[in-house]
Image (cartoon, rainbow, N blue to C red; front, side):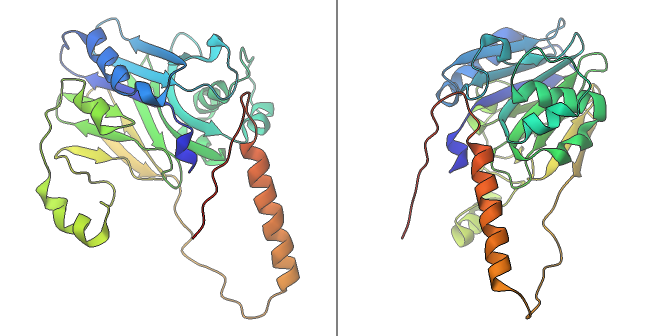
Length: 271
C-alpha cells in the first residue's frame, strides 16, 4: 500500500534536436498531475536535448526549497519519487552543508560524493533520475522490491522515462504500439513480469537495479541488490527469541515510516 504515497517523475535525453522541449516535459508532468498536487517543476538543458520533470506530493520538508527537480549545485540535479526512511541517519555521515531538511537533498548528496552504489545504504522506496550536467550522464534507479514504478523507452537517438507509461506517451516522442507477445503471460499470471509491458519498446526498470545512460545513448543496466539465495532451514530454534526479534524489526519499520511533516494514515485489510 506504500505506493499510495506518490510523486511522479518524467524526462528525456536525446542525441538529436528536440522541438518544443518545454511543451513536451510540461505535457508529461500534466499527465501525472494526480500523483503530485503540491508542486510542478522542470529542468531543461540549454540545448533542449535533456529535460526532467517532477510532480510533488510533499511529505518531508514542505517548504518550496525542497521542490524538484532539485539542484545540489551547478552540475547536479535529481528528480526523485519516494522516501528514504533512514535519511536522518545517513545525513549525519555526509560531509555536506545542507540547505533543506529533505530526504531528497540527502539522496542527491550521497550519490554525488559516494557514487551510485551508495544507494545500498538507503532504507526506503524510490525511483529517481540523477543527472551530472557536466558530463550529461544520467543514472536512474529503482528500490529493492520495486515499490516505486519506473518505465523507459530507448532507441538510437532518444531515451524517455516516467513513473507511468502515460507520461512517456504524452511526450509525443513515442508512439503507442501494443505488445501482443505478453498476452499469454498476462492471461496465465495476471501480471507481466519486468522488464516487459503491454507496449512495444517500453520497459520497466527491474527492481533493485540502476540504469546508466551517457550523452551518446549508451545504456548499461546493473543490479545492486537481490533476494538472498540461501535461507535458514534450521529445525532447532528459540521461538521466543524469534518472536522478540521480529517484533523489534516490525516496530522499527513502522517508526521509520512515521517520519513526516504531514498527517500520516494507514490502510488495513484482511480476509
